[in-house]
Image 1 (tube, rainbow, N blue to C red):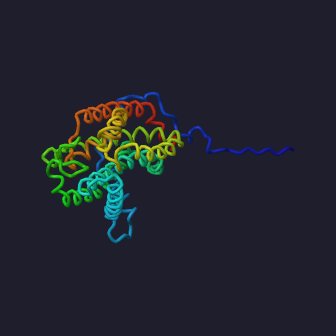
Image 2: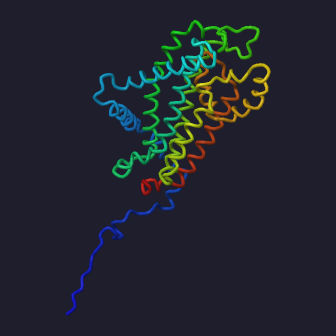
Image 3: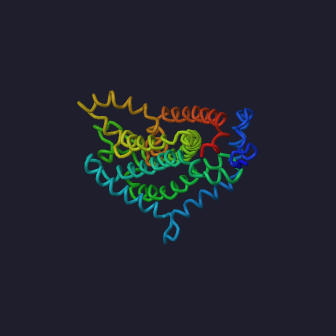
Length: 318
């Protein structure tokens, strides 16, 4: 008699396998419904985002205000350094570099953490049934809280140097003179345009997080590539160096003719400028608003297409 044995692999049983996404799941209606449901669950993503901040600074005496302190130290140190190197007055340059750092920190944080948003929430995605937009908003809300702590640095610096920023000023000579090429109007009621500017940044952060989050979940090498480019983009964007330095006479004028048009092709410049400029009394060109508005529309259309086609696959990719 020959003994035979059979091994039942319950893991491969058809009834135990997750059902693949149905073709009906690919629709713009379901993608839009996911986004709407995500925004409605404000209590969920608001609580998760706040808990991320509390967990990061758990058992710390001053908690998340370490964000404010570290940002203030970096802004002060680099402000003094670069104002000396560029020959700029500290009372006008320090607000410029501090505001640029904080705005860039929000943008870079949404990019780097946005790519990991679904990967980092793998456990929740597999355990609870919630719209993917909840995890997107969790990431953007967490970055918004950090921005709120960092903006305290800008308020203090602008308040200290308000005598130099409350009138027409030049980054090079504080006051505008006959040789001034760019004269900034100074602080005024139009500084309140920073409020809709930040709202636009947050709206763009949502579609960027959604789009890159889905793509990075499928292609895990993308976060490494983007993180490498973020540092390069930081130096290519006027954050630690002012665009005013490109203008001048002689060789500088020739340099500005081809550098400035290239600079305006950098979308990050426009995103930084619409928020930084009002906070420090600089004018924002209509072109920057148009660029940001156009990117907002195109970006959300791309995010909707990606959500339509791959929303149901994210839970299989994480």
